[in-house]
Length: 232
Image 1: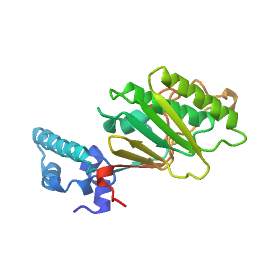
Image 2: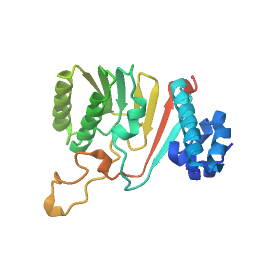
Image 3: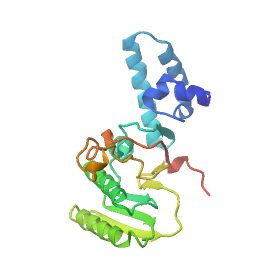
Image 4: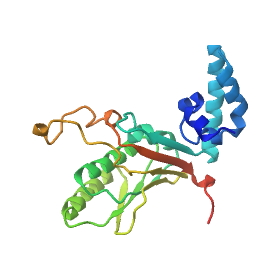
């Protein structure tokens, strides 16, 4: 079995996923060994496809756990890039638990997340949001924005259910196809734009619309399946 150091530095892990991925590939260790040793490009293609097939099988069986480390100031981690592999046919209901969906930029993050779901081929019908209670400064703003998002989603035949809690702390996204995504910073893992103060508010900059071009905070993402969790 690979050590944690080998997992983080292994080129197979870098190509097919990060963190604990190789720990889940016990059935492919021989293929991985060959992949690392073979020099012929055509043979590498063959073993690369076999490893990918095995990873996909693990995902389908719910035996897959990936830990993704997003480095500080890195790009390429939009919601779509991060979550699309787990948004498949059969997904109809989504639960988002995030205590910080109340300020303008956080509300826009949630809206972008909803838009991402709408663009995918799955037929999401209901989105549940559990967020922190409405504070004095953000009460009207939060209520108005979420009401507008709810109305807009209704026009797309999607129901938004919003609940508030003053005690939640954990961030979590759950899909009713069994996938669970835990993002250490919740949906708000993107950095503010780097623009001169005179240009505030920063509405016109690369990365404002395309989150793949937006720099991120250092963030850890854990992705696993309900079939791979211990029953309590």
